[in-house]
Image (cartoon, rainbow, N blue to C red; front, top):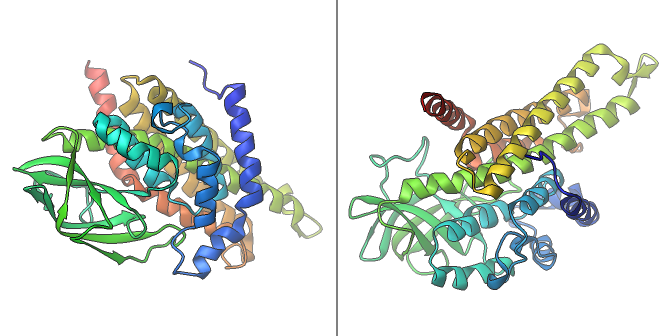
Length: 371
């Protein structure tokens, strides 16, 4: 088991970093914050599709590059580092992975080429409010191929064309593909801490619903999708956390107090050391998750939970301490620290809260120990 990218994957990662440094500076994120009518950066989305990133893990016969999940993890890290304001996670980690996991050959041939070309934006609509959805709490229902109910919050729900929706049919939970631009669908924008990522409430009133996977498999498939997404989001979080550490280090070396760089003071050294340790722990767990995901290993549920928990913790700590290291200017609008703190909080919830993943990790470890 090699916990590192290959030379080819590192080259892809470096090329992605150079591209994003050139095309996705902090001003691209601020442009979304300053203009609420812009839910995402359309030009950057088109450029990402042109680079082949949207089809990195999609098979060649369906219009993708057929590279694999490890290459997708490498790209995710750089997108997280750059805070790319595009619906990459919702479309690739949720929609594309759901279709690859549970879609029929007809569904794969119909949707995957459009995803790879950037013609479809996806979303995952499973939540119906606070708390994890359960069979007892699930209200959305499908009768005669028509979906009724409401989902919130839905990341990128305002801009998505196609959503994976969790709903009941004949009393059994299932997943369904719903075209959000069709009749019977209404959307309401929601305010969040990170306006650079769109969030909405979706209300369905007789919207056409296409089954994805088998009847009654809704929660089982949903957890498998979340396991895959957790690993990929972990790399985004590691990328953002590493950038926070770099920002803190650079500022600590350039900012002087009492005639010496603040980085020479023990309090700042300890902050940077703690950030580094948490980042490295998160990266190790993310690599473990990437291996399990790429290999289809039975350890994936455990590896995904560990990656999710470690990445959420590392990014939260790094973004928080980045603000503290910058001192009196750290919390201001003019400094980029706030952008990473916003994104850290958004990513900590988009695939389920850390608390739920901690409980899942403990249950997975207990099950393994019993076996």
